[in-house]
Image 1 (cartoon, rainbow, N blue to C red):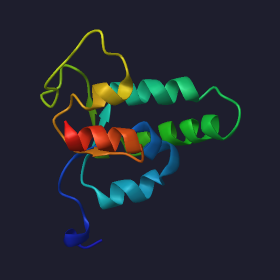
Image 2 (cartoon, helix red, strand yellow; image 1 turned 180 degrees about the vertical axis):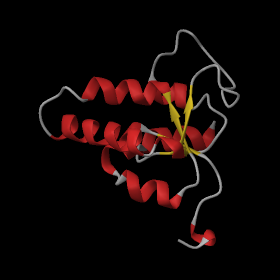
Image 3 (cartoon, rainbow, N blue to C red; image 1 turned 30 degrees about the vertical axis):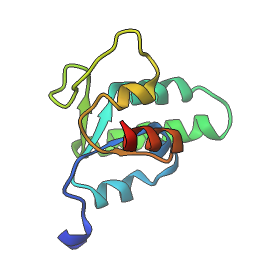
Amino acid sequence: MPLKERSLNMYLVDTNILLTADINKLVQQHDKLGLAAEVVDELDNFKNEDGDRGYAARRALRGVEANSEHFEFLTKDSAFYCTYNPKNTYVDNILLSYNMPIMTNDLGLRLKAKHI
């Protein structure tokens, strides 16, 4: 893929992207992707479900593991983390605490990210 078609910025990937995207194609389009521990936790919680979401979570976890060199694993100790409210455990709000653009299909999260 030509360099001009690749993203040189790191994006924080929301759970819904990993549940719906082809991870191999995703890592071909982006040099590095941020992956918050809370997103891995959500996938881990979904993986035991019956049905499409459980299957998608298992597929996503396998895809991340197979492409782990393309992911920057982030925690609240990360240099990208800028705020923390210990009472806030809602994953979308935790993702907003990272100082990087968020890749998401979640309209509510996109609206918050745009206006905060």
